Length: 135
Image (cartoon, rainbow, N blue to C red; front, side):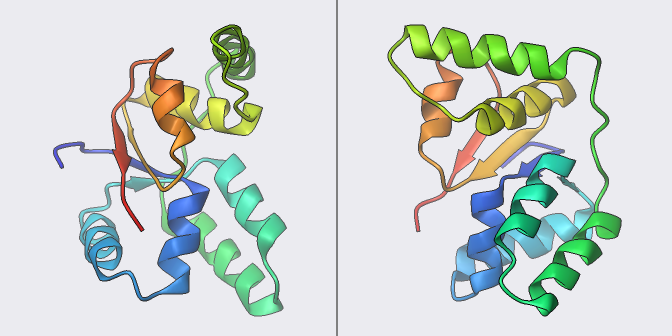
């Protein structure tokens, strides 16, 4: 994987925290050591929303300070809306948050690491590097 910047999607963080996925753990730890991982606030918000315990909530808080964030460029949400609209015209109903994550990755030259196959559909409308791992 040649990307210098990796935006780790919520689905990949969830799989990582569950443990038991050795290939993912190896990749994530390598990228953590290289400081290649970037995390937008929307991913942190999704992780916080899904936190089931106080310990999980604290882990999400720790993530916030452990990885470099990605600043939003003006109009990013509008571009995500346009992306969602173009996908809808292609018959693909993709959640706006995932379109936003893809748009942020595109703007910052990040590859997206995800387990969500619908990012493949998003790539039909937006050219960004994608790393989809099998579970």
